[in-house]
Image (tube, rainbow over the protein chains, first blue to last red):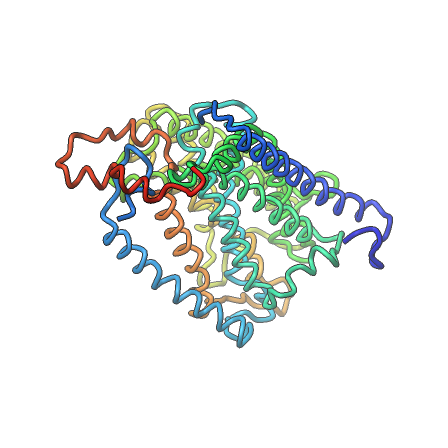
Length: 52
Length: 437
C-alpha cells in the first residue's frame, strides 16, 4: 500500500507499519543493487584478487 | 557422472544411490502435493477445521518451523554482528535450515489462507491494527534476507563459481552480509514476537491472555526469546542427524560447543522467565478472569498437568542444565538428548499457544473441543519435511555447505576408479567450462 492508494490514512499505524516494510525492502534492494553492479564492474575489469 | 559439480576434496555417495534417495523422499513429497492440490481445488472442506479450529495443525506447523528456523537469525547475529568466528563452520548450514524453514512456513500459509492467489492482499490492503500483518511483512522480508544469505552458497558451487560475474557477486554479498544479517535480526525480532503477541492479546481466552509492556503482551518477548534459544538447538540437531546419515564429522567441535553453550544459557534464562510468567498467569491473571489452574488441565482426554510439566521442566530446565555445563556439552549422548528436548519443548509451547488455546472451554456451557487433523492436513504438514530433506540432500552434495568438511575428513589415497568420483578428470572439467572462460 502506498500513500496514493484510496485506503491510505496518514496516521501512526500506517506510517509505522508501511514505513517499516519499505525501510526493510529498501535496505535489501540497495544492498543487492550494490553487489550486482560492483560484481559486473569487477568482472569487466578482470579483478580476481579475493578468496572467501 | 556429476563429479564435476561436487565440491573439491570431499567424497559423496554414487549418483544412483543419491537418485534413489531423492526418489523415495520425492514420493512422500508428491503425496503432500496431491493433498495440497485437493485443498486448493476442492477447498478447506478437505480438512477437519471447524468453528473451534479456524487454523488447526497448519498454524502449529507454521509457528513451529518459524521458531526452529530462528537458529538462522540468531547464528547470523552471533557470527556477523558479534563476530563469533568459530561459527563459520556451521553458519552456512544454519542459513540453509532457516531458508527451508521459512520457505516451508510460506508454503504452509499458502494453503492455510485457502486462496493463495489473494495472498498479496495482505500487503496492498494491509490492516495496520493486526499483529498478523506485521508477521506477514516481516516473514516475507526475512525470507528475502535468507534467500540473499543462501545465494552466495549456491554461487560457490564449483562450476558456477568459475563464471567471473557470479564469483564476484558471491564475494560482494559476503562482504556486506553483516547489513543483511542485521536486517534479518530486526525482522525476526518483530515477527517472532508478534506471533506470540497474537495469542497474548486474546482477552476473551484466559488460557492465552497475558499482561505486558505497552502494547506487547509478555508472550511477545517469550516467543522471540524461545526462538533464539531453541532455534540453534534445531540447527545442532539437524547437523547431528546429517553427520549420522553421512557417517562423517562435518562441523568442528568448537562451533558445536559454542552454539550449544550460548543456546543453553538462552534456554535457562528463557525458561526462568517462562516460569515466572506461568506463575503470574496462574495466580493473578487467570483467577481475575474466573479461571483456575485445573480448568485448563482437566476434564479432557489429552491436556493434563503433565503437558505443562513436560514443556517447562523436562523440555526446559533439563536441556538448559545439560547445555550450560561443559561436561554435558562434551558428552555426545547428553548433547543429543538436550537438543532433542529443547526442540520438543518449543514445539509443545507452540502447540499449547495455538491449539490448546482453542480446545479450552471459555463459556460456562462450553466443552473441550478436541481435534484430529484429516489425512490431507497431515500430508500437507509432512510435505515441507520432505522438501527440506531433498534440499538438504542437494545442497550437501553440490554446495560447500560445510567449509571444514575436507579438513575434518581427509581423503585417503584411493584406487584410480574411486578417485575419479572424488576429483573430476581434467576432461570433464573442461567439458563443463563456461563459454566465456
